[in-house]
Image 1 (spheres, rainbow, N blue to C red):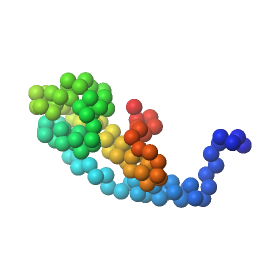
Image 2: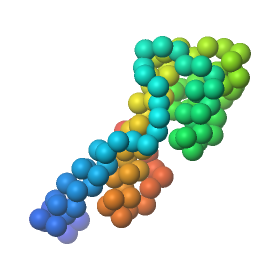
Image 3: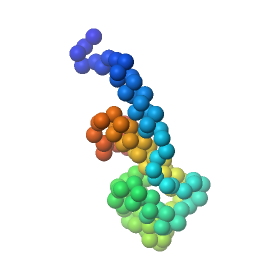
Length: 115
């Protein structure tokens, strides 16, 4: 076995299990139900709750910053599918960050394969 290969121990397995249980607790974001286009205020509030900029939010859903701004200002209506993608990605990031905190690791990066 190479020195750079990771061999799980009972301690690391228990730590992972505990982190998974803690991370699967309810996510603090209050996102509305899927299936309909959100109101501009809801879009802005969800982005602010997630703690990201309009540019970052736009990148999450493969849109331009201008499009995101129009959605928040009510100048254009966000499609329900785009809203659902945003909600899924934000929830996934919140779960990932929570798991990293529980495991005592740094947060802020994306989950593997998220982007």
